[in-house]
Length: 233
Image (tube, rainbow, N blue to C red; front, top):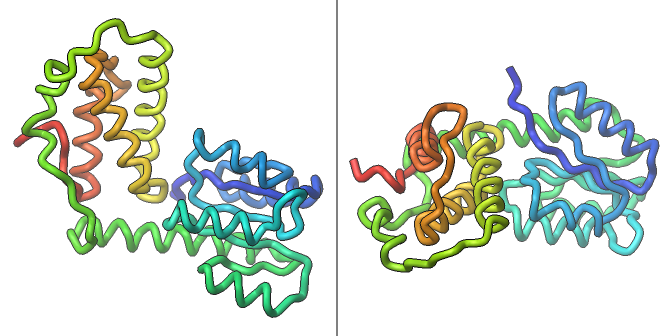
């Protein structure tokens, strides 16, 4: 069974957006369509996208400029520039940024190939994580996590702050459980949220699994061969 990915679709042509959404949805993935680069950028704080299909000719910003931004800030994302321009220089610039180049008109297979490439790379990253072959390293947070609340002693945290931390942590933990949707970005955000809860003395509710969010995080990290943060054992 294919793991569902979150896929950003940016094209100001409504019919092209609809076609891409249809192809992506039929593959079992979540397509999020927008008509401009600005709309796409507004989504980034609230979504973790694994793949992005970007039209080159967008109002206000060229697709390649947006692709450069996404590549710089989302190194694991698979990005494809979809364009009707027959421009060899643009194609060279795109490939230099490790962005796929898809000329219009495209075939369903062209779109599926980009998604399949992401899934293959995600599995390779997972294997490196499990084999401890990558460079990431964490401090021994588990030894000191329980002292954070007492050390900072911050009273009367607003309800909206608690709600935002709970929502963000749950969303990131859900994505981290998936091999295809796992990113180090979500790992850092989830861990930051959990540590913030410790610092602020916020009591996080148990999840549907029956675990606390801290237990869930450690279980997911063991699944991916990463260091746990809250279980010293």
